[in-house]
Structures are given as C-alpha cells and as structure tokens.
Image (tube, rainbow, N blue to C red; front, side, top):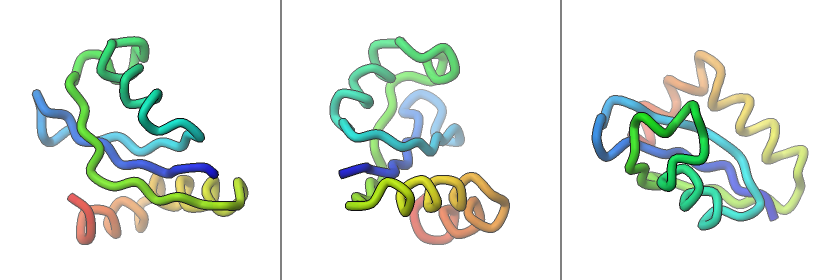
Amino acid sequence: MRYVYLLRSGSSPTETYVGITAELKTRLRQYNAGNSPHTCKFRPWECVVAVGFQEDRRAEAFERYLKSGSGRAFARRHFW
C-alpha cells in the first residue's frame, strides 16, 4: 500500500507539501523531527489528507498530478 499525502505547516499555514510513502506515520514523524532539509523550517506538519493506493504506479501518477498546475488547483479547491 502506498499513500499520497498532503501536509500543511502548523507554523506557516500557507506552506504545503505533497509526497508519497508506504509508511505514513513514520514519514510524518520524520518531517516533524526535522530530518528533511526541505521541510524542517516549517515544522510542525499536520496531515490534511492521505489517499491509499494498492498499485504503486497509480500512487505515483496521482502524486505527479497533484504537483502539476492543474493538480495544485484541484488540491486548493478540495483539500486546502
């Protein structure tokens, strides 16, 4: 199972992050511990939504879509 997740910063609510992982709780703990240089300055992070996929390729395609222009617009309308 792979999860595509959308995070929002607790310290700077305009900052968001989209990612993919097989271990959602572990990954969120890593972000909040400051283990990722890209996200450490906006800690703490909260998970807004996570979508689980049985097939890796579908999860990767959805993550890629959410990082595109139309995917960002979709996420703003439905998740943020």
